[in-house]
Image (cartoon, rainbow, N blue to C red; front, side, top):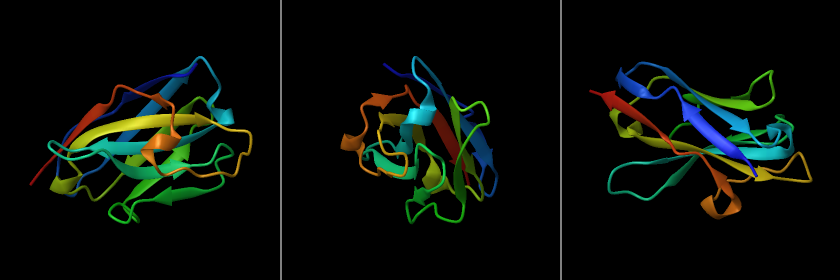
Length: 127
């Protein structure tokens, strides 16, 4: 079992930055591929970013590439999403997700890949 708790969301003006954190308990995240997803009001949940269990590879949705950076913390049980140059269309509830893996270099970008989810943190970007 993996319990995930996101934090760091809030209200920010367009062009600003936020850093989201996802802290885990129950299992070390070093054995999990991780992802960030988001869901805006009235829209389906969508992929934002993913990182391998080893931390060596990342992938991003085209809409956030070059603005968002996903990383793993030194404590190994936290992952981050650094968001810069935020736009009003980034407004959503952001969720982190975990997938225990055997192969540390695998990336996963679809919702159905992940079995563990946090409760989400709201990000609101004002224009």
